[in-house]
Image (cartoon, rainbow, N blue to C red; front, side, top):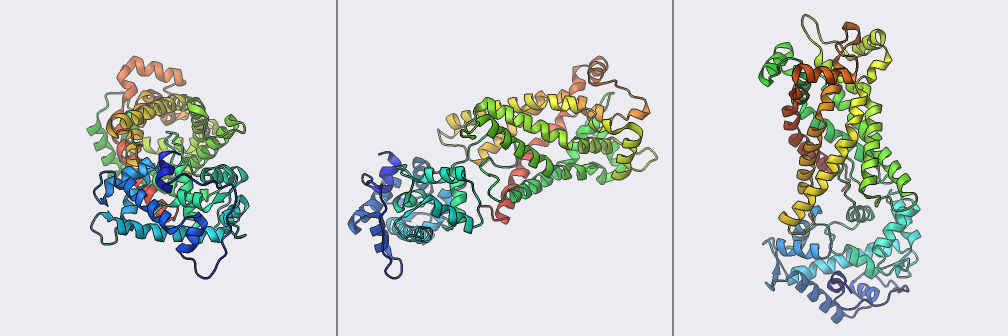
Length: 496
């Protein structure tokens, strides 16, 4: 019996290889809970007191936030979802910032009654246990459609003795410290969260979100978060592109003055509309391609355990497919951002697209795609390696072996993303210069290798890093805004 089981039960687990029918006599009470757990009142009192003492390791006679957080961590309940904060708030009836035994006991009574009510609602046969088909029916009624594999994983996670059914004791152990209302939808999302596998990619869509749980909502949340992030950092993006295409000495202040002179404030947001439009399709394509490749690599096994090489390959290929699909929009954005307004107005998107198609041909919409794709795998590899290293270092030296929370993961992702972007930045410069070059105005470059050769010859190695500073300056606000808006949108869309 491990520490978690001992803390929850207070005594060795009884065999639960059979169901324990409980005849309903009037309203549900703690008597029904005792019957379902095959516990006497004295045994339950002892269990709850032992559990309180488990949290009160310092023997203070009360629980504060630090003790609750440490206890949840010992029970392997993910701290990053703020359960400690919410649990303290729910238990602390007199709002003095700490939980005494009576408050803890009141929470246990209320929570076990709540869990028993929903257990009985799912157990339609009233035979004292939840069968997989009963759980499936309850999920479907709540609007959650899952396949047989995911249902089996759900049951397996809750069913500790692996006999294919869920007893009330197992149900209670799984949800006892879930401080929110125990609806079937909340319970499913709780299970989904505790089963998350962190892949380290910078995809907006969390790994735990499967195609069975309203994925369109997640695309909405991710799309809005990405749009907000790109709009907020659009001036830095415009400045970066303006510097990248400069073949002479490039300085930030003159570039800013030039943009302001041409279009005033709106000039810093030129091309942002296209940048925002491509967020949703790019995220959707990348997400579904990544999931499909993971399933192919797993070949029937657990697709969450495909290893680092599998994640790197899947992430790289998914990124390449998504980049190829939306690349014409990227080229149009670059053309808009680099259009010289000397005596001319910036063309409308429709006219610009038509002019490129008529005068340069459809192939031009993919000019610069090769250097763009060449940077994806190295970027993903450096990003993933740096992310995992930073997460391990933070866990060892900063968090003292506790799991990193979302803010720590955000910081690690920001640093690793900046490092990966810096390493492949020369390919970005080559791509942007190829995109910006109009084929019908006398091509300055004959291809990717010619861009590389001329840049090196005329500008030296520093030419490959023009615009790097504004590119790095937008990393932190972009990641932070994406994270904050995404979390807010999830709550607004009732995904939590």
